[in-house]
Image 1 (cartoon, helix red, strand yellow):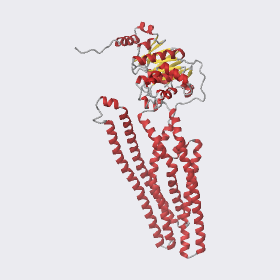
Image 2: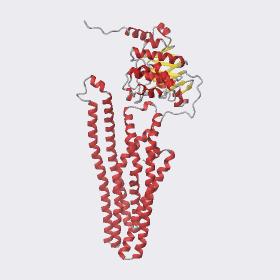
Image 3: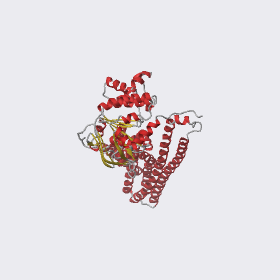
Image 4: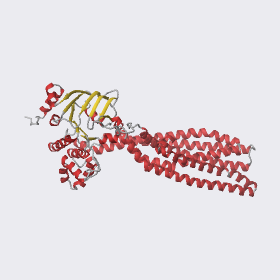
Length: 578
């Protein structure tokens, strides 16, 4: 846990952690010293030595005052560390997530990160503010009392020392039970939360097939799984806390028995025996709190581990400085091999070149690797072999910020933020003027959408752009690309599901983009493909054919078959059955 806390706070703040722990440990030691000093005080009181009692009480008072001062200092340092976590953790997580390869993200990990970034953050902050203090004090205080027992009677000290392994084993087992229960409950809660979101997002499909009345089986199964996980978690937590409490009671009984035996055997006086027996309660009391907090600490430790596991995920390596681009707008693949699973390559020894300010169309069957080509250009992943160059330089020698400044991406699945139309377009270039935003919107056909919306430019589009149609979302995405005015524009299936009106706006935008940028298009529309300066045919992860539309038709290969099948499909009609 200490290593996780150091990673969480970062290099510049590790001293904060150890300073807090040191002050907390000192508080526990002073508390133990104050308790241990009560033994001679009680013995002198029984013997009637009032001068010694006054001296003892002054020492006890001094130790108590010092403990209070130290406790205040360590509490303030704990709150400072908690505020530091609350103030910086979300930012550090966001910065680190932004540098991870997209292959790391999947539904399960996204759900876990979301839960850890919300509930987990507050639990970790509470670790400094509330949990570490009783744990450290509950260990250092009894340790100081045990050392005092050696001073008063070495046999009683040995008994206390012998009890330590029993407590350690019991606390460890109890914390493991509580932590295991929390892990089970957490996994079930993440699964249930994911299914709830899935249920909400799939309402159109569920209603279309009349499945809402019968319920949604995956959601119902997840809720039932969460119920079972909750019961098991409760049982494990009960067992864990019970084991710790029983261990403390056992140790207290052993120490009381040892003290009584020493007194009856004449090794210590009756007065000292009463004082030492009282000291055993001061030894066992904080340990009982440790047993209770150990389980809670294990739960928080799970949250801490989940967050630090994310922070330990290696991001894409960044160069110390971006290499200059000798060929702006040019794209090149040099014997590139890549697979999401290294044992199953998606691209095999692919070599291609896209000249600057040209239009290249990628065609091929589903799964041939077209989308993977665009993802590697944007360095969402690194290649397994070979080199991808953008602007004449290896993408690995270009910083992510610099690489993204050279690219604009338009995908089929467009995500719009729950903000205004203008804000979603301005994402392409936040510092653009209002005139530039309006011009990009005009070219992409967004102005026509604005006129129909009740709030015009200030209309919020809903989460994911839910208030717009798919074609309208695509227009906004194209407007972003136009506004960014990057040297290279990548369009992945952007025309696949557009109606004639939206396609008309997109084609107009493509012509404008092609005038000033390199355009790489994955498309199935015949007009878009035929207009390309270069057509690359992908098949089974390799470049099967390359050339212009006329050249490829003349060869009579895969592209000619693709063109013929698409051309015939244009004449398909639904007719009444006779």
